[in-house]
Length: 74
Image: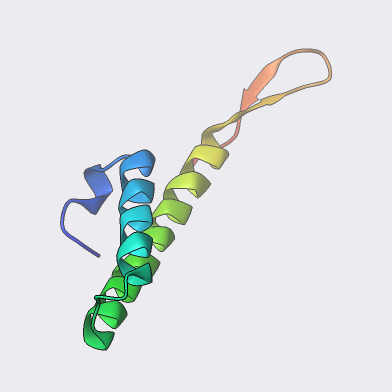
């Protein structure tokens, strides 16, 4: 994982993934660079998934009686 990834927002990481995809779609990229960028993209997506999981666990649950119960985050 790249240094500082944990301090970036989900939007920033997804923006970087989009940028990597555009670079991978370019015909001007070498095979070696393609593999490097692909690996970086996979790592970013894993970090995005971890961030989304944390947010989902922190979402409050609305009970039938209208009360809110926070889910226990890890």
